[in-house]
Length: 146
Image (cartoon, rainbow, N blue to C red; front, side, top):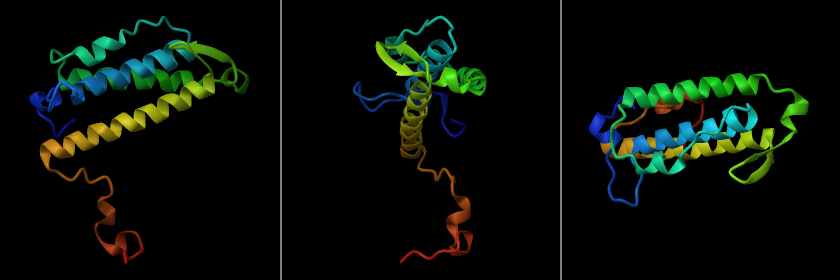
């Protein structure tokens, strides 16, 4: 997000694509619904369609703060789970899952959309995200590529 301009956060190549901003709203909504509401017992206030219909109006700083806040709250809920609670059944989006399944769903879902955000960012900025900067030289990982 730091490398994107406010305009790039809401850019989309077509109406069939999601902007980075939409994906950020969607991640926050998903974590809130599945973890804070489903596992944590808070009210489900999610309006999923709004996550995708937004075209602007939320700054990248606000998007980051919203997502960080929801993730921090989710970490507290997850950290407080007992083994018994993790195996309890809950209903989220008309799916009956255990609390543990809900957590795994969110982790997987988060990873998939994070990859989309990284890909979109690379496409717009043409920058290396340098996640594995230490691997730039063969000495960095002790292997050579054939």
